[in-house]
Length: 178
Image (cartoon, rainbow, N blue to C red; front, side, top):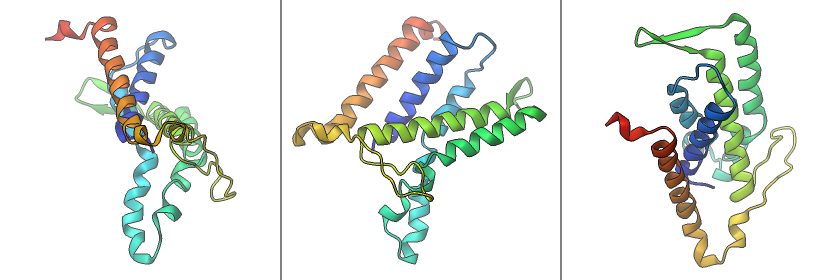
């Protein structure tokens, strides 16, 4: 499994790139914070496991099951589409508004990207659980020599963090704020 930081950084970078190159309207930066939260939603099954452990469930029976299936992003997407019709706005700090539908779309994208990262880099996912136990996983980390497998995630996190910091400095001129 990628480190939570990997999921968060990948989602932040993708939202920043989307915001910069594809979305020409107003896209507040606090949606990026929401994207960081959305990136770790599928790993909430660890908390579920701690409650189900006392009922005799193993981690394998809980982790990467429903919250790591394609149905979680679909649920967020469908609810977002329904709510978009009513266009709910959530106000915070008097002058800022967040659209609930956009938050749900970000949750859908974050959970989907999380599932993809898990399936591509670390282990397997069951994308159609509970309707199918078919598993998908390229497990690319296992292609590294065994001595490098434990550090592969840390190296990936380091590279992503450097990319994001350089992006913040050279594209967004973050040092102008200090």
